[in-house]
Each structure stands twice: as C-alpha cells, then as structure tokens.
Image (tube, one colour):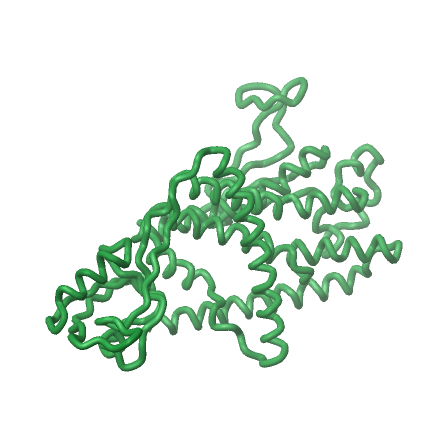
Amino acid sequence: MTIILVIIGLSVLILGHEWGHFFAAKKFGLKVDEFGFGFPPRIFAWRPKTKGNGTLRADQGSPGETEYSLNWLPFGGFVKIAGENDRIGGDLDKLRTLPPEEKKRIFLFQPAWKRSVIILAGIMVNFVIGWILFSVVFMLGTPKALIITQVQPGSPAETVGIKPNDIVKGYVDSETFVNFVNANRGKEIEVTVLRSGGELSLKVVPRVKVGPNEGALGVGLSSAGEERQGFFQSIFYGLEQTGLVTWGTVQGFYLLFKDLVTTGKLAAEITGPVGIFTIANQVGKIGWAYLINLVALISVNLAVINLIPFPALDGGRFFLILIEKVKGSPVPIKLEAILNGVGFALLVALMLVITVRDVVRLF
C-alpha cells in the first residue's frame, strides 16, 4: 500500500511540474497541442469544446485546440506546447511562414522573458507543492520515533547487529526504552528495529555491569517528532522548511558534483526510484506525516535538480536563453541538438547506475 501511495505521490509531482508549464503557456495565450495524464500508449483522448468567450463545454461549440489524453503509464504527465521543440528536429521553415497573428501563439517566437517564465513555471510548482506538503506535516504533527544514533564498539547492541539510524519499534521516548532494558539486565530480550523498509527482530542480553558513559545495551538514543501547529504557523513553518531543504539540497548537489569530479565516485547517499521506494516503505510504517514529508522532500529535490544548468533539464534550457540574451542571437541549432542529446544520454546512464546500485543493496 505504501509503495502505491508513493507512486501516486511521484506522479502528482511530475504532473504538477508539467501543469506549471501548461498553465503559464495558456496564460500567455500560446497554443498548447496536448496535455497528457500519464505516458503513452494512449487509452483515449478528448478535446473539450469551446463557445464564445472560450468557456469549456463538452456538449456544444467547436472542438478546443488542446487535446487532453489519458495514457497507460501512470507516472506523471507531459505537455506539448506549439513550437517548443520545433527548433530542433521540427519543421522550423514551416513555422516561419505562419501569419503574424499565429506566430504570436508559438513558443519559439516568444520574447526571452516569456519563454523563461514558461520553462521555470514547472519548477515553481514543485517548490509550491513542497511548501504545501511541509505545511500539512506541521499541521498533522509527526508521531514520535525512537532512533538509534550510535552504537558503542564491543557492546551487546553491536554484537547482535543493531546499527545507527535503526528505528526502535514500539517506543517513542528513550526513558521508557531504557527502563525496559535496565529491568532486564542479564536476561535475553527482543528488540525490533525498522531498517531499509523491513523489520528485524534481534535478541540481545543487556550487560549487568555498566562502566562510565556506557549503557546496558551500548547505544545512543534520540526521540524524533514534532507537535501539531496551528494553520498559520504551519504555513510559515512550511515555507521556512522549504527554504531550509532547498539550501540543503543545493549544498548536497554541490558536494556530489565535487566528489564526482575529484574522485570519480558517486556518493553513497544518492538514491533512485528503487531506493526511494525502500525508504518510503520504512517511513510509511512510522506514520502518514513522515510519508508526506518524504514526498515534500522529493518535490523540492526535483525543483532543485531542474534548476541545474545541465542540457535536457529545464535549467539547461533557461541557461541557453540567458546565453541568447547575452550574445544577441540563439545558440546554433546543431550545437543545441548535440548538447541536449549528450545531456539526455548522461542522465539516462546516471539513472541506470543508481538503479543498479539500489537493487544490489537490496540483497
């Protein structure tokens, strides 16, 4: 059930991103050929009819210009804005012969600032979704969880395989758990922890004699959780959390690329869809608030990733517009095609490497 909810959440994030492009294009009066829910193959499509001032009508008037499609692969969606991709591989000469009134509705012929707004609109939607979800988390309050922060070498906990970041099931504060352990010194007890999407039941014997700065199990403990906040406080805290996560994500990607360039290795913390589902399965057992928080984190991460000035990403397209403004003319078509092709290939290769590594970790 958790995996299904995460798939729905990720689909909403991607669909929301594409809706941002769609909304901005429509607001500027551009022609949008298609807005797709999911990815092909197509199940069916429809064109809402219009009448008079453009009010959508399903029963009368002429067919609308935008086709809405429902597709079999329910992982997000897509938008086709007229002239958005026709500069590369499209019928550019045909577009140039269009009447002036039609050119006004083609993406390719829009001023740089309008193209920039349309490109960045999807990113802004992901930031807003993150903000909304973080606010919801503060309103719900996150259930408290007891987390293992450290394991002392040679301790009973280390001997049975307890590890840092394990979540102790059934306890939300350290005092209750410590009292239980101390009451059973020298006796075998069962400690259940949540780790990597699964539960582990470990049998351990707390030591009777405890030295300075030692515990009967030999672990450090920390309670995690938030109290419920009011509506307006939640909105403010949600915005603040979005800013903190954004800055942390930017720093994380900087260190990632720095390590990638200097060492040629991909940081162990980087994960893909398989890893996300594994993490989601684990946090889903703690509570809804943690699951919503995870989707909010992913939304902000998607926004930051798309801001990176890398070919094939929104940030790369925006960067090319900036170059166009500086030099006074667009980047040569062939060069743009090469950059986008190479960028897309590198992104696919990176995703494959991350996915394979995530699968290997499962075993």
